[in-house]
Length: 84
Image (cartoon, rainbow, N blue to C red; front, side, top):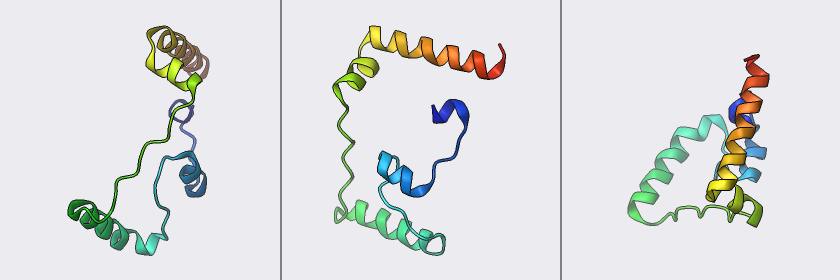
C-alpha cells in the first residue's frame, strides 16, 4: 500500500512495522550509521532478523495462487489511482 500511494511513514511507526531497526535524531544520524556499519563489519553488531510472516502472509506472498491474487489487487489499485 505504501508503495502504491507514496504515503510517508513516521519513524516510530516504521520501527513498529519492522521497516527500520533504529530511530535516531537527525543530528546524530551520520555518527550512528558509521558506528553501526563498523559494528556490522566487525561482527560486534548483529544483523536484525526479519519478522516472521503470519500464515496468511506466507500463503499470499510465497505461493503462486497467493501471488496471483496479490498482483491482481495491486493492478486494481494502480488502475484506480491512475485512472487507467
